[in-house]
Image (tube, rainbow, N blue to C red; front, side, top):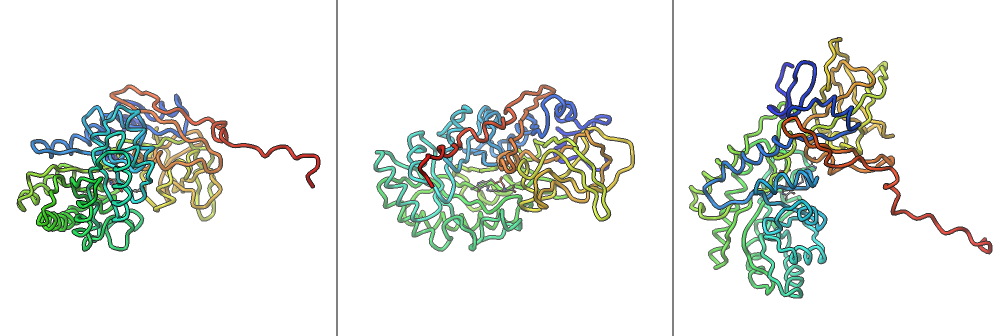
Amino acid sequence: MTSPLPGAPWLARQGQDLVLDGCSLADLGQRFGTPLYVYSRRAMQAALSAYQRALSGRPHLVCYAMKANSALAVLQTFAQAGCGFDIVSAGELERVIAAGGDPAKTVFSGVGKRRADMHRALEAGVLCFNVESEAELDVLSEVAVAASRTARVSLRVNPDVDAGTHPYISTGLKGNKFGIAHESAVAAYRHAASLPGLEVTGIDFHIGSQITQVAPYLDALDRMLDLVEAVEAHGIRVHHLDLGGGLGITYTDESPPGADELVSRLIERIDARGHGHRTLMFEPGRSLVGNAGVLVTEVLYLKPGEVKNFCIVDAAMNDLVRPAMYEAWMAIEPCRQRTEPTLRWDVVGPVCESGDWLGRDRDLAVQPGDRLAVLSAGAYGMVMASNYNSRPRAAEVMVDNGQATLIREREDVRSLFAGEHLLPPKSPRSP
Ligand code: LLP
């Protein structure tokens, strides 16, 4: 191995075998079948503690953005470590509760919350709603009044900064659908403070995902602190600052700051501007789970060609859509290394689309029956899986210091059409 694997030290080559926290991935693929997602519990715990370490000694809450990976065992791991959650639907809230998470440590984000979802979240006692528009403020207040409750709110402001990431996952620019425009934010706060069902508690931003620099965060923070000062000048107290998620991970040669470095740099600025007394919140997703997981797949066929060599595997775009959707580069490693020379392959799945690829132009020594691991697949992998081509979704396994536990069974084909109905039989009189 010439370069360290993303996910080190939990992922390493031991002899020929690729090993995740003490478990050989080739063996796990054999035991549980493929495609198979495998996660390291200790890698997730370590990623969370980097945030917690940097925040210790001041009031704070890390809310895991569970859209990145919402497996119950993943949520349980974070809940047990004292973590809160960032949710974007009532479905995610039910998962938090089922996993033993605390709704009182849960923030509810998202541009399109429905009344029923707001009602359920109020009933469960979520910490606060991250509100994204003035229209949403009105609806939330109505729902809260009807339920005889008060909704704590934070306004998500759009600071209009460029996070320097893929356009689909950049969210903090004026042209994005997210947040309340910086210029309208003071008016929105005054409106929120005037509504009977609401209590203003905080402010938040989230400027994008897979961000590899500190600078865009500092720019957004400065704009946020300007706003907090303007809002408080109107007598409205802002208790917490929520700096969103978005910290990137290493897929190939990116070198994002560590979570502790990012947090320390932000705290430095917050303190320098005299805002150190406020509760600090973060909503990391990818940086807590991305490099804690891999997708194991089996090579079905090799199809060398004139222009391209295709290595056809049993995982497809329905299992892991990031390469097809964002042209994302994710490392692919043999689970058990061969000594033969490598050839250059496009690693593709069985789905009937040319966009169904996991990696292009990869140098690998492979044979049918071998298992490959797609690395950095712990975030936005399984959660974005679909049943396209009537393919059941993969199984998931959590490893912890050499022990592997099946945390989600492979989907059963019959369950894919269990809720469907055939049309009634044709009546004899119909034409
Ligand atoms: N908070 C909010 C309001 C968000 O919208 C997101 C992610 C996060 C936190 C967590 O961001 P993270 O720390 O994971 O970057 N499917 C895409 C990523 C979409 C991110 C959506 N929002 C991908 O596979 O790259």
